[in-house]
Each structure stands twice: as structure tokens, then as C-alpha cells.
Image (cartoon, rainbow, N blue to C red; front, side):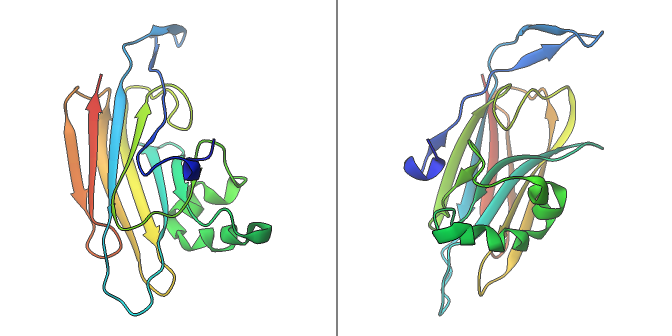
Length: 181
């Protein structure tokens, strides 16, 4: 099922996995859920288009993992992918190597307001995160509009109940990342 077929609040499930000191796979840890809220601001402009948005996580010194890409994926002949490169930082980090639509990642553009996605660590695009420093990155680009990128640094494993916040100033509003078991 594509995210576009779901209501505004999309839930994706992932299960945490622990890696032992020797690198062997251990038993699954208690499921760690990551709730992300991305607020798309309501702009008063003459010609408004919903933004294309990419969400990814970057480990310190590692490769980016795309968690979500919201774009016009249902356009005829895949024309919506033509403008994905306008989400420039994401495109350079991982977008250009992806095939679209990407199962579990692709979703429709979203209307203004808070948009929520939940992940449970270990499966799907989030995958198993090893302990360390990470940055969640949200980038938006809008036709006849601007671009904006917001970074939210975090440590893994996080403290349950911890909420991290950041905010954009034009194309993105409040971003919050909440960790729970």
C-alpha cells in the first residue's frame, strides 16, 4: 500500500535489533518507536503548490537513508519524478540512486498543516540503527516557491519520552521527533 492511499497520519512499523560487540545479531530489543511531525505552513501567495518533501537520516560519517519522499508520484508517465532533483541536498545524498516509486517511502504531496509519520526501529527504510550520533533531515522545495532544509541531531539509542524540536522559517514549519517504546 502506498502512503498516498492512507490518511494524513501514516504509520510504518519497524522493530529494533541489537548488534553485539563482535557484530553478531542479537535478540530484538524492545521496540523503539520514532514519531515524526513535519508541519507544512500555510502560505499566502498568488500561486501555491504543495511542496515536494524528503525526509532522511544521516549517521555521523555514514550514508543517508531515505525515510519518506512526498511528491506527485501519480502523474502520467512518471513526470512527477522530473522535479525530485529540486530537493537538492536529498538528491545528492541518496535520491539520484533510488528508483521511483519506492515502496514504503513514496507518498503524495501533503497539504498545509502537521503531517505525522511513525517508525518502529529495525525494519523498512529506518532499518537497524547502531549506537551513535545521527541527524534527521527534512527538506522541502516548492514550485514557484523556495527551498528549505531543517536538521535535527539525535543520539541512538534515544531516551524514551525524549522529544527534539526544530523549525523552518519559510517552506517548513515546526519539526518534532519523539522517541517512545
